[in-house]
Length: 234
Image (cartoon, rainbow, N blue to C red):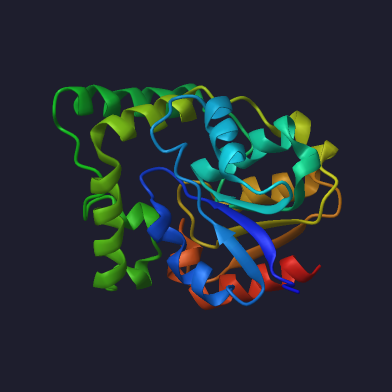
């Protein structure tokens, strides 16, 4: 009889299933990993959550990074009884600030003018730790994933992110083992946002990963897999 747990892994903005490649491989002995894709081309966080739930097993452990973290927080409101444990990575429980929304709208305007650039070398310092900028294979994967999502997907995903709710009021209602994880040098969703989430979720465990930016599952794959393995056994 298999002892592997169902584990749903939800990627973030401009990321595909390839983002979770190392985690799927390293956890395959303890987890049956599912990376949903039906949410990729939707423009509402609630609809994204429903799409993920449609691809998920009846009961499952749930992990999301960045935009994926917004989606899994919505899943905890829609179907908390289906989730056995929760991991929030490099994300936030807060809604967009007006300044963040304005920046996103500027990107969308450029995209609609045919100037979608996906992930470029100029954006990589905001995504990965300085030490990882010389990892050409990692950087190339990020660029390829963004190209695969494309301009239409980018517009829809950013629209969903701008419209997300404030999740802070719902965090104290979470009643499953929860891991809150962040790269120490995350410039987009910095560690203080994760301290806030961990403080709001009863019994949550906080982990700050050194030598990582916004994407620890790629940047520090072995370390993150070790932490996820412990979380799955908690």
